[in-house]
Length: 149
Image (cartoon, rainbow, N blue to C red; front, top):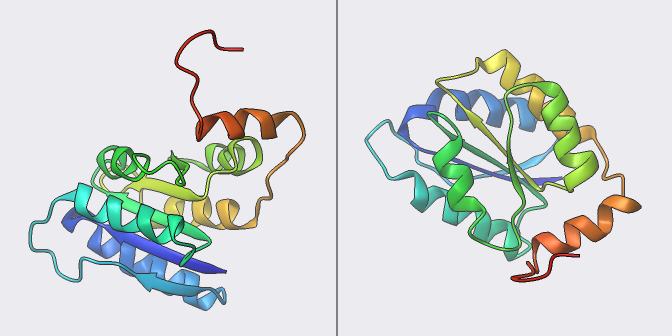
């Protein structure tokens, strides 16, 4: 699978470990940066990641920052991106199974690398459940302003 990964300066070490894990698992990885611990703005990298998903350059994405919150908000500004912030395996599983999430976000200051690898492993190996979930996922990219059905 083609995987794009991006972070801010707070998650450089976690990003490096996850890039290696993904490569070892046989995935093609596009590291969108940053490459140093110099301070950067997480929205810039969240947008880069979402653009890689939207353009079809990546099948899945990994978004990392200190908490995972900011970069996930940035990524979700693009309607092609369904980014789920997770901190344990069950959330990673449900994000794929129920929400067809194509990006996983995690906080490097909140979880360790081993938990992140576990979440990523589950995320990468869980299929979307379809059926009743599909109509809900369809609505994520076409929100209803009034009169939700």
